[in-house]
Image 1 (cartoon, rainbow, N blue to C red):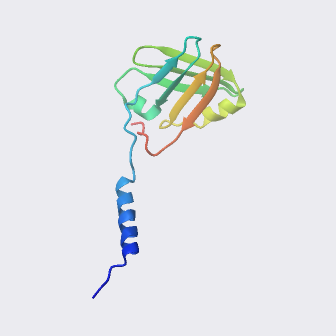
Image 2: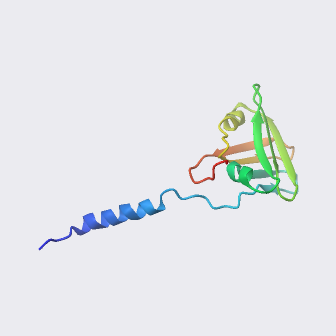
Length: 129
């Protein structure tokens, strides 16, 4: 009589089940999210590929100069526009890593200065079409 090696069987099931979840995609709505606090500070965030492919007139982005001057800006579906600036090699380094398919978050203080820029890359995000 043939016996099934139960631990090996469980391992095979676990590995094949994991493959079913491979390639999962983020299913967010792809809009620009803007927060604006009473003191004028706030943030802008969004998934660049999804926003580019979306039907709405929204945008988000950052740019840097050769002298590490950084400017970030965003507009959402409510036509709210926010922007910030900074002169920082650290923030300029973050901006350098932005791709068309990244998630971008920028945070600014009440004076309109960018205080944080986060760039996230993931295979779960929708690509720019």
